[in-house]
Amino acid sequence: MKNFLSRIFNLKPSLSPIVNQVDYSENGKFEVIKFERKYCKLLFEGQRSVDTERYIVEMLVKSGELIVANKEIAILKPQIHGTGNLKIFLPFDCRLENIYTNGNELIKENDVLFTVTQINDKTIFQENLLKQNQKNLNKTEINYILDDFSNEYKIKFSKIGASDFRYFKLYTEDERSGADYLGITISNYNGTLCLEFYSVSDTFTLAKGDEVNLLFENNFRIDINFSNGLNGQKYDYRNYAAISIKDVKGIFENNFLKLKLTSNRKRIYQVYTYGHFAHNEQYESILEGKLLFKEMAKKFIQMHLDKNLE
Image (cartoon, rainbow, N blue to C red; front, side, top):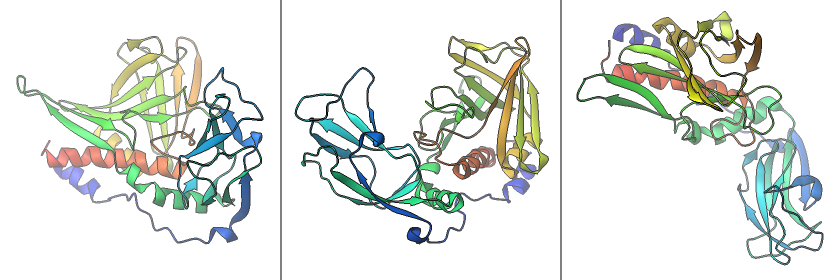
């Protein structure tokens, strides 16, 4: 197995594609952003806001950063009436140019907050966003855990991207809040290679007999059927399936596209893929998601090489 892993590991997919410097002014629209209600949402449900309120601004991003659509840019904190905190977002991909407020200045509606360049070219935006977020993708961590009493081992992820959640998150196309997702990860339990799944859906509970079909580029796919009963409780379900070395090689070599989860007992299915980029600590674009999932396979293989596992 080691020689086989060494051969496929020589492919070395990179998390650092060549990205050209871009003059964003030629690829988007420069805009002055004022404090307007159309860019605001209450930070917490049940709060309220009034027109005569005055706020201080807490910036969540810096000048020069690329920002995905609907990501929180700043928090406005009320100083006069004590009404609700507001979060500022923009409904388009952009680059933050200049900030016109500071932490001590009181602002009101229609005051200028910052300027941005709206970026219309999706490819240019995603490539340069990847370069910006490189450090977060590289924070992925995998652990080798040895039981000193039985001499059995586990290989499991403890961090995916900048997130401490150990499953790679996938979403349905219509998911907006980010609360409904399907998690997937790769593991090894004393020589048994596995794909593990995590579901928060009370409809798709990863029950025995349920099927998962994973599609990748280049016509590669993995088809599994859960032969084990689910593990967990309401809104917290887990299950796993054994996979082969060939499957790990396929994950490493090919970009993941989407998966289909089928509940055979209920005769329904759901499709999951990359999504919910605005508040995702793991990836902020499809391009990042593809490379991060391959990076997981790369680190998984490298751990086997480092531990000289057959």
